[in-house]
Image (cartoon, rainbow, N blue to C red; front, side, top):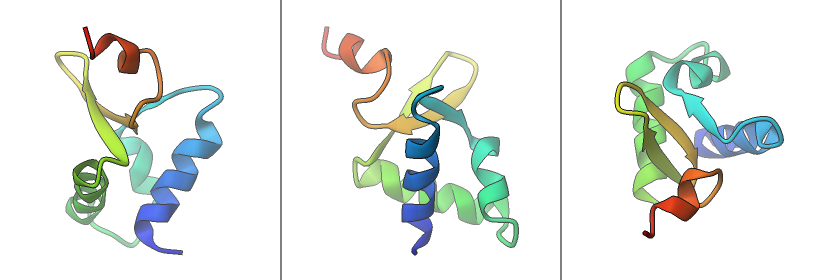
Length: 76
């Protein structure tokens, strides 16, 4: 399984309880990687439009594109 799929599977496994994740939520998935390497994987998924950034103003979070409450509000 590639690194991107690990992230997608992790988000989907938690999707019943939450739709947005902090960067630090992903670090335990890759204990042998530096945070910068994990960030590159997340950025690649955002660029491929699998994930999207969500910002509360002070914190940037990640979520599956089109999932969660933010998705419907973005088109207004």
